[in-house]
Image (tube, rainbow, N blue to C red):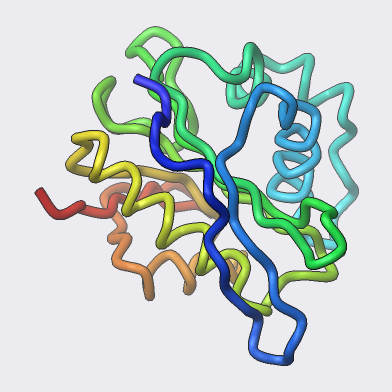
Length: 181
C-alpha cells in the first residue's frame, strides 16, 4: 500500500524566516533517502563515520532503502526554498525474518528520519514526523516504530511527538507511537 495521497506540497517554516515544504517521496528520491540514512546513521560528529559502502553492504541497514519504493512504503521529503531536498522520513514494513532495528511487528511500519546537518533544530524533523504520522493513520496504520540511540537529540523529539519506549538496549531504545484510528 503505497502513498496515494495528494502530491501537493505542505508549506511550513523553521521559525527564522527560511521556510521549507514537504512533498511525497518518489522513486526518484531513492539516492536522497540513502543520503538521509547516512545522516541518521552518522548523527554523532564525535564518532568515526560509517561509510556509505558499509551501510549499503550490511543487510540490517541496506534494507531500509533498497528497492525504494516497494509496496507498502510511504515517505516524505522536506525541500528548501531553493528546491534542494533537506530531509526525509519514510516508513517501511519488515517481516519477522528480516527485522529493522526498531521492529515490533510485521504490520507496524518502522520509521526512518534524516535531516541535513545545516537544517537540524529548525523544525524540519518535527514537520516530517507529524505529516508521516498523519499519512500513516490515513493508510490504516495504528502504530509506528523506530529505534534511536538515547544520546541522539532526536530521542527527545520522538518522545515529544508521542513515541514511547517499549524496549531498551545497551545504548538505544525501540519506541512506538500509537496513531489515531
